[in-house]
Image 1 (spheres, rainbow, N blue to C red):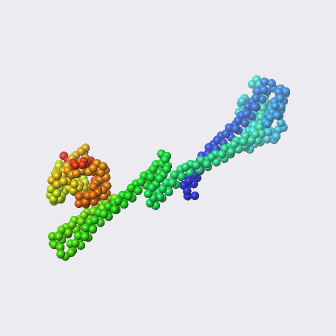
Image 2 (cartoon, rainbow, N blue to C red):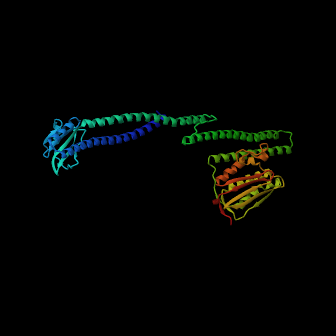
Image 3 (tube, one colour):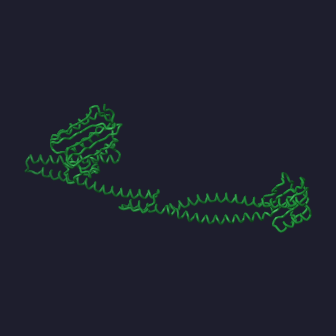
Length: 462
């Protein structure tokens, strides 16, 4: 009883039965009325026909002839004089006919009048036609028809409607069964498919090919299945990469701490090992921080506090922080920025983005080369570009560089290749600002990373 097909079938069946009942009642009432009117009009027309004959020749033989004609018919004729005294009748008069003859006549025109049309309660339906010769009314032609004739017509009509209604009822049930089955069968398959997804099945195949709402739903489920499979694989890869990223520095820390604690090594060697331990600890700390930032972004807990900031001052702070590393690698940083550029950003988060991009450029730039940080105004939007003169990124790799834990060169060490989280964090932070990050690169010519903020975030630049 809880099946959708049953509920849908009952609902459709109820609606159709109500509509059919209303239509059948309307048609039946109108047809029944029209058939009754047809009987009454025929009765009146027959009386008018007899009247026309009597107006041409009103004598005993004609009167008897009219009575004789009706004696063989189902109807009954009574001809009276102007005082409603019976002259001739085709059959003996019953008490009900006499009562109708005694009723006063009013508003009876030459075309006649139906006297009694209550076929449900009366024994007869009646009509009267006045006989007028040379402008003088000399009598009346009364026509009576047993109501059994009308009831017989109505009964035939009722039987026909009952038969048609029964056939319509059966056809409705069949149509509803087919329709509900047609609709619910793909829904049942989709239900099983979603249950399969919940159970961890890797492949969902729905063969519903129609381009309707059910087809779109089936396609959405298939797309969801593929997306879940991709996310499952991404999760596996992510966990594997994170495990590797954490295991390697922890192994270094454990190994070098053991060596550093040995006796018999020189102070210089111990300091060297402690330096390595410190670097690996900082690497783990940074990795955990990045993971924590990504987790907050995924849970929408990563807030952006925008405030007016001088972009050039922000770039100057970044330069100041990175100066020791630039000197270490013998790199020159060139900043091009109009001091009047004021942007509405989260200074801490935006500085994190710039430090990350600059750190990537430093890792990939050859010694004695240049790195450029350029601020431009394009179409009312501020763009910040960080460009290096490194080896560049293959064009086929560019669409993936912002994915988490993705490395262009999988064989590079962490010292030069990083953890693969930096650019994904950059993308998330800039998108939280409402902006976008664009990457351009050519092998052997370096890489450019451009941050483009939305127009509303450029407060002043003149």
